[in-house]
Amino acid sequence: MENLALPTIGIALLCCVLAVMGVHTYASGKAQQQAVVDRLSITGPPAPAGRRRRFRGVDRRMRQTRYGKKLDNRLAATGLDLTVGEFTAYMVFLAAGLWFVGSSALAAFFGPIAGLLGIWAAFGFLGWQRGKRNEKFINQLPELSRILANATQAGLALRTALSMAAEELDAPAGEELGKVADKLSVGHSIDDALGELTDRLPSRELVVLVTTLVLSNRAGGTVVGSLRNLTVTLEERKETRREVRTQLSQVHMTAFAVPVLGLGALLLMNQVMPGSLDRMTSSPLGQGAVVVAFGLYALGFFMIRRMSKIDV
Image 1: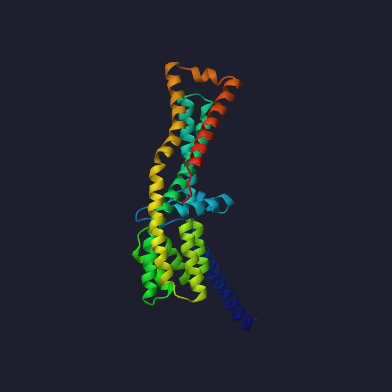
Image 2: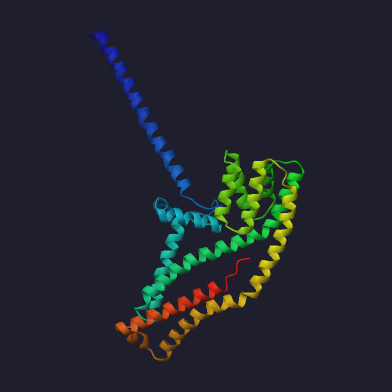
């Protein structure tokens, strides 16, 4: 029995050591997993020095939903230094603030309408920022085409030419081409990497450029002549777009002035006759009239924007 006691104690001690090592390995793995989740929860460009991400728990939960995934793609296309959680929280604060202001300054009935306008304004700002970034990227396409033509004429491969263009061009073209170069470096094909670029920044000019590069890469032919001709065409389209935008600037201002005049009329009426909005919205007929009026203003805004939209 004494001979069996020592091996038993040794095995027991070995099991204890292995158990402690297993618990330590499990805890270390959980910590590493949480660190990876925290890094993945940060969308968009890296946070600048001293910038701490807010609402990280909200961001993790939102990114697991379909709404969060779509919003993540929209934020990536705008180039804003915001996460899904931050944007959602700021949008909720804006809607709540406008709800309070609308209820206090006008009437209680206008609170929910002001909150909905705040949500619409937040998503409208994303669309405006995306369009602004897309327009800036389009203006850089002639220079991008020129760089690619010079690089391919010098004998560089298309992958190397794209990486060189990412280093030489400013944002947003440099940032977007940097993403393309990163995907190419980890094994993605040129078709997939450039296809994701056109999804993030859709435009006819970019589609033509990407199609030229993809077809030339598949056929294995030279792209110098095509890129030279495309550079001239993009320069001409750039000037045409600038002229059209200048001609339609007054129409765009009119579209925004129409709803502003309606809101100003409500404020003026409430100042001239205090409490008139409360009395007007106290009955279903008055509430229906207000809803119809806001709907007509919104319809006028969208109709003017639609009629002034010219695809070049």
